[in-house]
Length: 116
Length: 136
Picture 1 (cartoon, rainbow over the protein chains, first blue to last red):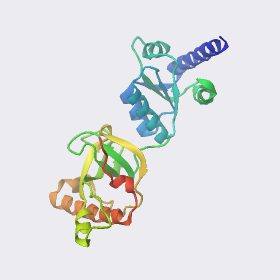
Picture 2: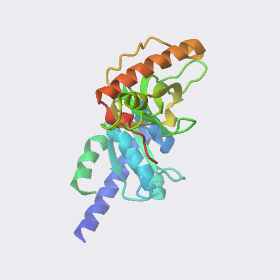
Picture 3: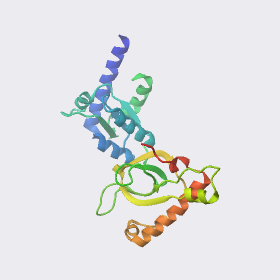
Picture 4: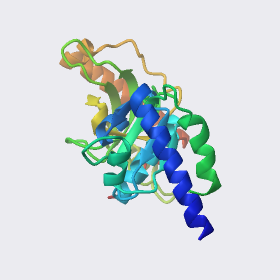
């Protein structure tokens, strides 16, 4: 019960941070563009929905390992991630190239090691 | 937040005639060229891998088995899979450009140079992963 509540709170905070990035920062939605930003070294954080195919998930994690970029596994599927980005389409992977006013890059990797 | 496609990085070719072959990035062109504005890299790769060598083989057979047939080609970044491996300081003259690759005589010379370097490296016993065939 307690972990459910904690997860929900964490999810809300990620969503609010994402909304701030959408408003004030730069991002790339979609698999092809996230790979592009990873290759160029411009990606600061990668967010992957939980229903991306495992092969694609591993591939993005490998690229992020090579580029030394953090990966966050979003606690929701691509429909929810699209909604969290404020879009009317599904989003499986997104890469944040400039966080703008949000502190998502500083706080998220720690939260990940904690327990998402 | 580093660039991935650097010279010396081992890369697996994903599509085309050389799909499944391993290669080394000789030169990376992040912005592409004037007429092809996408990320590209000049790859020197192995077309025919060297065969396994055992102690029982005669010197002539060992020599035959250590031969490598290389290729040199420009690939779109999308058609490459970078790996965590590197082949460092392969002393190939990096001054050639894409125009040089279009000239068949120069291309042959470059390929020969690459072949000599790769065979030396293979006989040294370094970069074993690069010279082993990717099974799929």
